[in-house]
Length: 303
Image 1: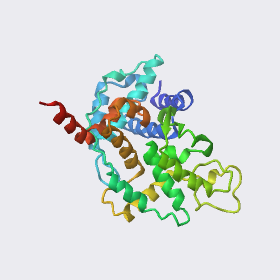
Image 2: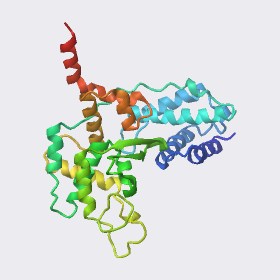
Image 3: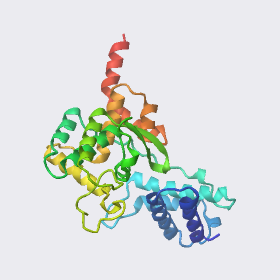
Image 4: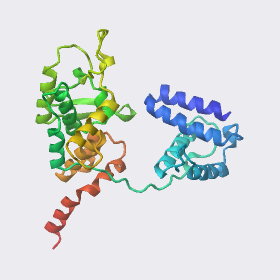
């Protein structure tokens, strides 16, 4: 089977068979097309062998981006994960090729994550002027990010009907189309309620952008939905006004959410579930931020 055709079939399977996200398919396509270009003399999947894989790993290690930079270890790992998923798909369909389990992934140094202190979080909230046009909306978004631990794309995709403010919880569909329950704090519910009271429309999106407002607004308001880039800009600008030195993004608020849970005694399995992580390994990146609690445990029990 030709390599080009096999990659096309795999991407179709990811989209139609596994219902993977558009972003995941775009990434797989990018990484596998790079492998296809590298292995241009390998026209069929049966010809993929150990030597080609080794040469490809060296190629990734030495690869230069348009700006002259090398690919970092994590990006190299993503390329190999995509290739391994592709080969696994072929093997599952009884197509003879290189065994996917023989591809070893490079070891990536444990990721360092930034989290805000409670003082910085308060400063971030106070940097929002609620008397301004979008102030109530922006403050509600910040509280939503911290209260729920949502990814910025998940926040952008929220619809009003999803959020049960009376119960203070609702379901969200995250990576891999997995459903999980997230929770609203009392403070978050109050700010969200204040924002929604200002709305006199029936549009579906929970958070609306005013920059796209026009007389032609029709239907369910999809053209007014707050996009991830706009949310990221709002968070970044609020952090600048709050004089927070750290680089603050929506994901930093997600980190802060997880860190606070762990510092206050939550077990890591529960945090994993609330974050929507498929693997506990991903959640473990936060454990180094809970050293204060570990020190307290040591002092209490080490005699």
